Amino acid sequence: MAVIGKIHSFETFGTVDGPGIRFVIFAQGCPLRCTYCHNPDTWDMSKAKIEMTAQELIAEVVRYKNFIQKKGGVTFTGGEPLLQADFIRNFFTLCKQEQIHTALDTSGCLLNDSVKELLAVTDLVLLDIKSIDAEEYKQLTSGVLDQTLAFLDYLQQIGKPTWVRHVLIPQWTDNEERLHQLANYLKRYSVVEKVELLPYHKLGVVKYEALGMSDPLGETEALSKERLQYARDIFMNYGLTML
Image 1 (cartoon, rainbow, N blue to C red):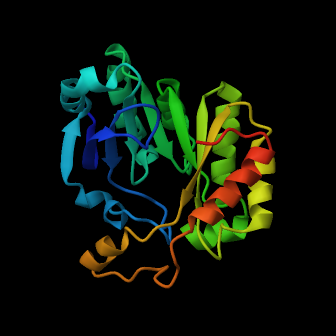
Image 2: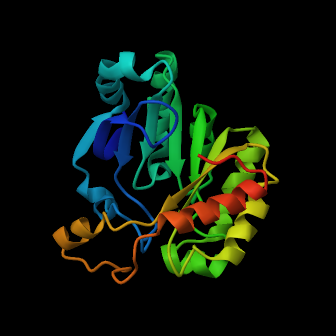
């Protein structure tokens, strides 16, 4: 019996989730509850807007193959894709048969045999490190930092190309001491090819309102361009390549 994927939505010409032009798939379902999440409508897996097999999904993707194949590819994001590791492994296997580059955008919150099999057919991991401080990580996400760091250790072990993503939130992760701590931590990993610092924004407020939810960071202002550049300079001083 075919594994059915639960999907929130597609973006057919994505340019910010990996190299080149990409077909981006948003998985439904996430175990974290990030206070700054701009896709709270992806949390509940039972509310998937689309359900399909890997064969049905690859049929949709190949319609755009001429646009994405040369320098782009497919990115599975979320939600949290690792909750559907078997489905995405099947889909990525079909992508490889079509010579389409595969990227996985994840918080690294799970590491089991199914996830390891998925990583074997993944070309690039976009690893979201929410905070390098364990207590702050828990406060921001309700998750556990050690799981993400263990995931990164496994990526290093298997030599998987990795881009690290980190959201800068005023009064939270936009903290000079923790920025130095994270940069110093990452510099030891040879698989970390690039680091992308993402400024906190207010674009998710509309979704919270539509869902009848209050924005957990309602009083927090968007990050300034000056603070973003200041943080980028810190990471570059540790020899890390920035997106």
